[in-house]
Image (cartoon, rainbow over all chains, first blue to last red; front, side):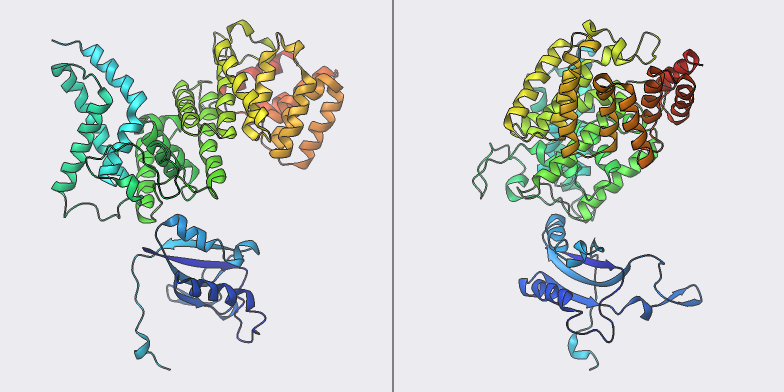
Length: 120
Length: 421
């Protein structure tokens, strides 16, 4: 098994601070499905582009790093035996058929601090 | 002393015929496309020397396979620790086999016979996760065994650029774990389309070099024909595979007459039909009839049917224009491309007159999707001439001349400008 990161590209993230469960229903449903199927091992939903702050050299600017129509709205990591299997999982993301898309990248290595040590 | 020339001929022959089989057999051992390619290349080089000394073996392909596999095993043993840290090629257990494995195909879990290993190689080289440029380069290098400098020359890039393109593609296959496998039924039609697109692009690149002096880059055309024939043999039931094969056959049957003795372009209407390859046309005809009978013909089968109908007429004027228009209409249904709509203007002018065809061409021009495509002003110029608008025709020819990159085509258009001042 190999790990693949799936980067979600959309006009913006649905996960605004004041988003209602209804706003998030499609995203969360897909996330639950992947978690239930056992293929997803980590997932992060990001807040909208307005919340982003970028640093280039010693200059800090408001907004996403790349000025583009789409931003990374979130990402998750799946386990799959090969690229075809990873693509098959990634293409079920609802964003693919609603104007955005996903990018699939093999994971080289990763680190997540164990949950026990995380501040609550 | 043995005959060196005979050995060279035998090596060249088996290189053309058996390269892909020798490579796939070696991949089973090497589990790495790069290493397998290197070992097969070395095996062919060593054949040149060995066969002069020891004679040409009864089964050259078996000799080459054994030699290449041995080199792969040696290389793996020698560099067990130092071997490239790239992951091994992702293959099914049945495909990997063991070092000695030359087992006959056995049924896999779904009960279907294991396909020819060359199919796995072709689908891996043409995987959509690779750029089409990389797909083409990989197919020529790994499936056809074409040397890197030859591929570089065909695509007008430096050897270093082409080598880097191939290295990057092989690295992605290993790192992203692009599987060495024939896709399942759900993905198969889409993936076959990708493979056919690569073969067709190779053929058209060779047939009408988009720039440079030679109109026919024979090597690429031959390789495309070879691939189309191989694929047809491996996927006998696929009508689009058959359709592409027929299309290449028909187009290539006219190769000898497309250019005159001076290398200049000869129009279809002026080509010497007695010099067309009748055997190839007959073979294509049978294949096309088979495709059309099977129902729901696809893009390539319909293109082949149109090309075949053009070729079957005893003379240009006796072409069955109405039937050709009907086929174009079906083609537009499965492949709604403005290029197809433009080409349809040619038979349309023969049936409904040049003015009606001109109206359609001008509408395509207004739609703007063919801006920069030199065939549009070229076809328009011909239609304008035929309704007596010589001045407008000359302007359109000049426009086509400015857009065309192929020197034979530019020479042809320059001639038209001179003839219609």
